[in-house]
Length: 399
Ligand SMILES: Cc1ncc(COP(=O)(O)O)c(C=O)c1O
Image (cartoon, rainbow, N blue to C red):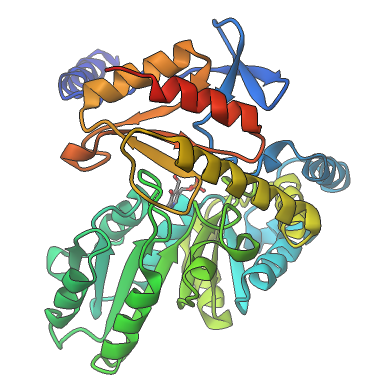
């Protein structure tokens, strides 16, 4: 019955393989090893995990685990319904308040992922009178969000990555028939660890805002930034001393759990709760996840959280200082090693794997053609000796 469909799909899969877009088989983590390492199914020994977004290692923090267990005992596992049909539990409501307070925004709304948050945000804000301007290296959820919201080709422009001149040119090029512009940018760009020039983007937006009836609004997706770096762990906005109208974040990276959120005005948040498809028609994160994320946010506000951030910053400085291969500068624990050739990236990752280090090879079209790299993600659970070991292995790599 499925033969014809399967034949067609096999054909597509072959095409992906030929184009070099086929993903390698997924590895399976079978357990946690001592010293923040992991064991993999089918392999001996423990691996240093330099390919995870769990920057502060909060996914294993006893306070988060206890909060999840307590919430499960109190509320059960699944939410049982979407938010507006009695799927909202106390931890969901408390988490929204805590996220808004932590980031100094008036209101917050949680989604089951940052990806889902972006889809709802863009489709809820999309109107025929809205023009979208997006950084060329933005995350797939923003790109796909624009497509899924039905944004037409003449309703959007892509500016060169981080290029303020090009952004200004794109703003100046917007037809006066549009009433509002939304600028979309990642805070930290996950493939490179570099940071959007948010302060300058905000200045440009404010400068030209009065030319459009509904102004220019900047949306920052700081999924890799919030909780990972910046003063108090508040990410790229704090790092660049900027405030944007709308912020998107994830609970599934530095905060160690799962889920996403949007921060903004109380009106925006109410609007999303009324109009966001991925808010209305799909279950929220579980009460346990919400309680654990709440514990993560609370921890960041305490000495222990700040200590982890400091520890991570020390490790990042040690790694940056000792790295003798080419990289892209950046203040974030993502450190790309530029090999500029996809085969070399793959060889480096395989070599590191043999040395017990997990890292990620990134090639075109995920990164620009001449920027093939190996992405190293540092975390606060790495010791000084771990960093020294990684540096020794990486620096001695010869093609
Ligand atoms: C900028 C950005 N936005 C959104 C996401 C998706 O996050 P989530 O896993 O919460 O959907 C990512 C994750 O890679 C990201 O880097």
